Length: 293
Image (cartoon, rainbow, N blue to C red; front, top):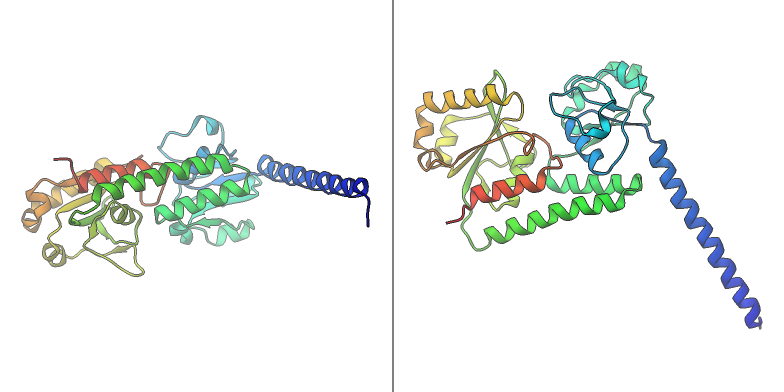
């Protein structure tokens, strides 16, 4: 039988070894964060990295105001057509893009040996998962936990607001500059906000985020609330929507128009994909669906 002194020595040794291993693990994670050369190809991703206090070597060219920490970071082109050459010149370790724009990364990126990491941001759950994963990967667990907690609080508040009430029928439209609009289903980001806020999206799908509009189907659905997403060139899209609603008589027959429950959704609070304004966006949708009496 080993003496108490020997046992104590073994235990202390194990503690020391574990402590060293833990310290090395923390150092490795911290070093990974410091040595990361990250490129964000959309403004939504920029918001996520900014919330996690991550450094970037490349940001998208956009009209949106860049966070102060990225003021002098290289611009790599618009989210719809980023430059593979400019991205390659930053010598990135990771290039983040959104899955809905996957088709934009073609031959030129293969030639530059760039393999983007595509983030799915089509729902609030996707956003929370992305925050948690990146928080773990880059030693930003505290920042990620804070961001997720903020969103969870907004979800709880929206759920309580809708509790025991009849779900309003909601139509979600996404304006396309110079090309009319599409209908957003439950699979779209704004459609997910409607679900979380306790609304009934009048157009649902198992696979598609957007579907072609049908005057007859819209009139038949009799939406009580209409949300119009104008995330790109909002001035032009708002004018398009206003013209459409005046010229097409069926709109006047919808309960939403008759009751003046048509709302315009614009950046920075709303976008086609989830961003760090999700908590505020959910709060707004919740208030529109269940206005205080």
